[in-house]
Length: 482
Ligand code: GDP
Image (cartoon, rainbow, N blue to C red; front, side, top):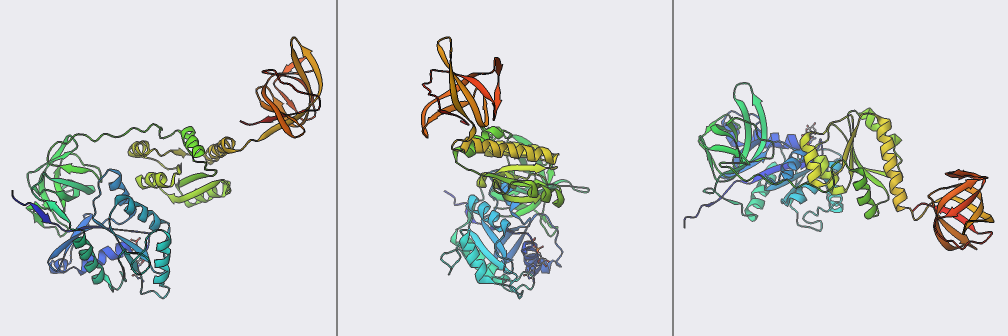
């Protein structure tokens, strides 16, 4: 049998907190690449690029950030083989560093830590290492075996070492793909170009792609390859595993993260969750079951001002905000909410239909509001509802039995309400000398001769229980939540 498994270039994604230097690093690598320099250094952004180092190729996904990564993963397509986690040495681990780590681990991709901005006076590499260890990323020499490099994306110092490390990690992972297998690729970027029409950048996962190859997303034919163009604007004849290129010839643009094949594939079943995306009651029940006493939310808003106003109005002792951000609800938000078991709250922001679908699949609950009052009220109701579910038992009112009247064959308890209130339908405990002697429900109440639903503190009433209760004069009637 013919051996068709070939070594292929590693596909590398760059993740990390905003401003930690992802774009600068990707730009530096692209610009300092020999092939690019030979070409005059003119490259265009197509969402991915390839460099050649020691006769080996490396493909970089040029859309930094964990959002893009999450988007692909949410469709089951792990486009990259290696993830570079960029952490600025002067800023250390930040929320999006942690989110990136969660995404990378969920995807099961090896990590290389790149401690960036070491040229800055405030750089503290040891702090980064120890902070990373606290969030589960133990680098070499610091209790773990995750490779790391120190660099400056600005000056270029340390970048050759990073590239060597990428080759080393890819060798260790023995990346091979079948070039003769049916073609499969993952979509990295899409756009509508005035001159070229519908354009999508893809990276080949297996097989090869040439001009004329039909393109399918699921069972749907979405075009035929008219041209393959790399980031240097060169037309290519064929793409092999690990190669990126802009593809022309689409009749319909696939979505980012979609898998594109050369023939029809069975449509992927999208699992319908039992919990509808907007079901707050279901969310509360799940939280109560987990005995979570605080409401965990991921908050999105349109402006910094409204974000601030909402945060200031939420009860801090009862609501935990795992992340707050500006902008529409994204796939990364839903995935983060899933991992932190949070409820996604959006104010004056939108959630695309694809988000609704993803939320259902991932069983994440989200809500959007346009009126702050409504948002706060609903969150308040959830918090209260949770409290009621979880509270050991809350007293609603206390009365004392001060008289007894016969009523048909039953006993009516003449009661004085000492505090709170007693109401029809309440569950009550009968307490004698601080001990509960019976439990029942208030079936009906009379004030003088009139049937009433509720009696407040200070008033007297006659109470009929739903079953026979052996009360005595002097017993307390305590209405409780159940
Ligand atoms: P991104 O949001 O992670 O893509 O971060 P950028 O690449 O946009 O970088 C954010 C800022 O940090 C920019 O002003 C960069 O010039 C700067 N920066 C990036 N890398 C370095 C570095 O190694 N040293 C210094 N001093 N500044 C850097």
